[in-house]
Length: 142
Image 1 (spheres, rainbow, N blue to C red):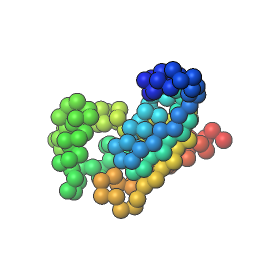
Image 2: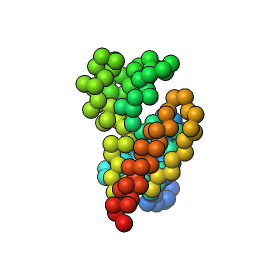
Image 3: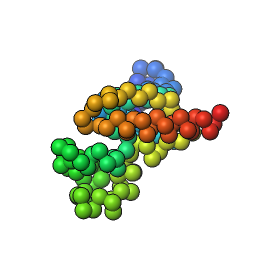
Image 4: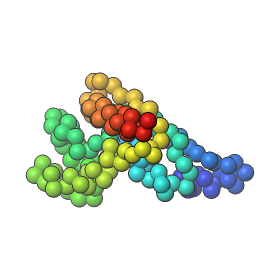
């Protein structure tokens, strides 16, 4: 984002905000950056669009069924440590650190969540939990 800001400023374009968005992993990264890095971002995040983005990498749905082996491999890579069924609970904090759900606050940018009910990879509860948490924060602010 710093690179983009510097690049466009060389064309006398002022970047006073940006929208982040993506599908699946891109949605996850948009949410994570927009929530976790909002205070250090060189450009303010004005909004986020998540299309089936994972929001809680501790969610039980990742660790059951046909995709659990893939989840363990991907999440091991993301946390920089081997994740397994046996050590999943001891690594919970590392998974929370890369889960957007755990960074929701009253200063989060407006968020549009798009999620299919029959997604086989990202369980729709991920989106429901995020939406509920965002609604509670908004309700408490009003």
